[in-house]
Length: 343
Image (cartoon, rainbow, N blue to C red):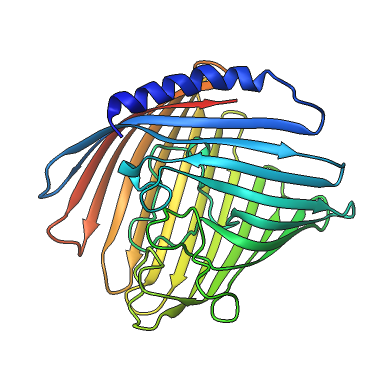
């Protein structure tokens, strides 16, 4: 898609979406959505400098609540082919497609297509702290969307647990994390996820989770499964956020992945945020990744965000990444500017 067409489409979306948001269909139907666009400039050792100006992603979501306990969610997701697309040869796809039932006793049962519960950083670009993710370069341990059934249970005021049985953990080749592989059914391949969330300590949120896939084939895992007939993959994830005071917070995460030879290692990140005002917040990021027997890196980032309105924000980012055992690449620099629109 040419840049002029992208910009025209973006202008149309920004003009139309507020009008949709102001229309209340009825008490059972509501809409929400967002779009993110950016200019990005990257320079990697021994490679020409590259830049891009794109509408990075957009989502429109419908929430239907026919009864107090029943909710259906359907969303349409756009990501340009120039950034990986959503499926081979396509810019758009159905992303969320699920039905949830609240039992009223603390348990919520969900059936359909939904996002993984794993990871501190969000799948949704509008919810992340920076333009680029802290890691996911080599191992890519955090999955995206898959299909199945999940149960979330609120144990008490401070504890929540969740379980998922899904068609897979990782995605079909080329699907940019928007769909599980669902290749041969649960008898031949299945994914399991579980988590525990604790908020019983003042200003502190702790989360820990595990995901397991019985058989990930070469090409179905962004980390690069090497076993000819596939291999099981296990991921352990723990993260926490502490609100230091009204203006600052610190978050940290450690992820360990074991997917066999050349697909084993860890990711980590630390974020510090400071709100200079009710409109301006700056994130400082330090992150890294280490592949067992393979490359590693440490990434340094800063990203200030300014909220123009309740619906529109501007963000900038500068990053420097130092690589080891990844010759001829020794380092990379990134500079970008981003707008984030939501309703």
